[in-house]
Length: 428
Ligand SMILES: O=P(O)(O)OC[C@H]1O[C@](O)(CO)[C@@H](O)[C@@H]1O
Image 1 (cartoon, helix red, strand yellow):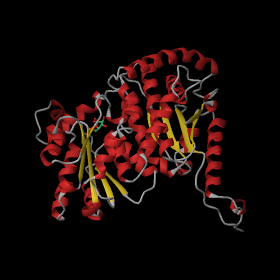
Image 2: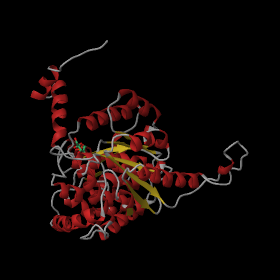
Image 3: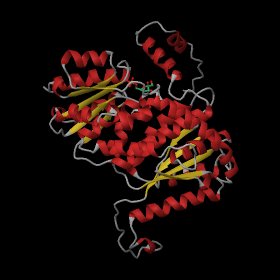
Image 4: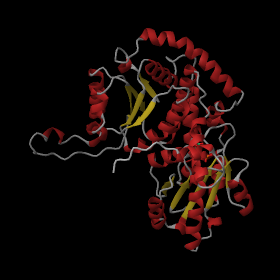
């Protein structure tokens, strides 16, 4: 993973090399704190040890019990689904991967109607084992399998914590299961059983993913000038401090679109604390040049854009054409056009004084993805240290969970009563 901060200097908001130099002393101290947390396998910091501690053999052993399926369906939500989806949507496989991470009845019904349930592995993932959406979807999926005459106990892999509903279910039915690693918040668990089981089922090289994570560990250093991950974390923090309260992550690769979704949870749930944080916006190049770019260039000067691309990709030639004004495209290629648009968008943002950071990987493969995922996790941890927020907790999400549970008769919660007190101004 390589980071280029050049287009974040002298912009609005913007940084200077003097700013970065001053910040580098704080980066060194933060790195000491992070290294100490990793050495002690402290809650949260343990996530940065996963490239070394994740047990690829155990993951392969858990999935080897299933014949090569036609499809794998992940039933999970948030970090229990997004890491696996990032990898499966970035890498191609003849095993189709699907995700149920919402409780939309139309979507669930449509997906279950299309799935070859007899040749699908259901990968149910929940660290807590109590997440309503995940458990509700699993109950629906399990009944659909039964209705289809499929023995769900033969088609289900469970990944969960040491205790809870899913652990009891796995024990009761002797299901193949994996442990969610201790001390790792879900949004930081991509490089673990949580994110790698699907990749293993799809035939991807999960040891290469972990090797990429180790490349990321090796690239950590006590200076932002020596660590791409820390450079990104420090620059995004400093830009937020100067008013860049939105970070639009814009990969120039369809295969990295889900990465932006994974990044959004990582960034929002880790850094959105105590009135602080930086809103992750999900964009896609080149598509959003015809959509959100207008706002990024000419809207409020409160954003930075993170432009992500692989520098190597398979290509498709563009045939010669005599179409008026388009002859210049002929003989070029789609990849050449995409790269030209990446660089043109980068320059157009700079010309408008909008800070943008370039993040590049060699290609979209297991090792580069492992390094990218690790790098952004380390960047997030560094940002959290600099911002002095509690990076690894997410207390603000609990209020809504209690309200929903109360509305469904799952207990007496003041939050549910508050729902009834909604102020109304209906326009019919
Ligand atoms: O793995 P679990 O416990 O089902 O949690 C799923 C997701 O829900 C959250 O806990 C937020 O409610 C996320 O942090 C987590 O990734």
